[in-house]
Image (tube, rainbow, N blue to C red; front, side, top):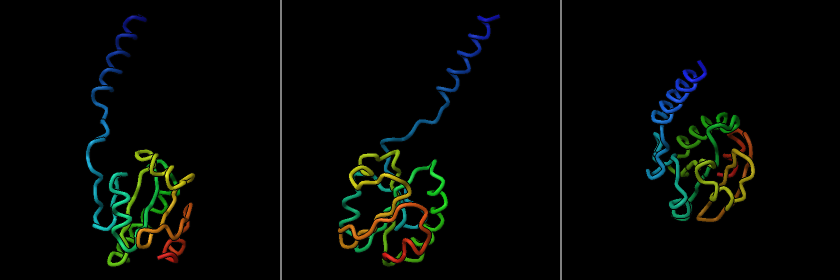
Length: 135
């Protein structure tokens, strides 16, 4: 009986491992519905920040409750300011080195760059006004 249970467990575990979705680490980050609002890879981060007049960067994680609260707010800001501001998202689980470089210790963290220089940082679910006052 124990042997049958062990075999069944092994079969189920093997089935899970071969059907589990694998992260696609070699693909480029996807753009969201708005061209100025998308995910950004660490290699293109500096280029995006330097080549745009005003950039809002959202450091987030999929498991973060306050990040989920801010997602629709950031999307609306991206749409409302699409002519003037580029909005990017950086998943701190995928790019911890980028989060560390900019001193991100809590999420969500929002960095606002103007002409390549960091001009403001906001941490937490600060709402629309907490972000737009820097734009």
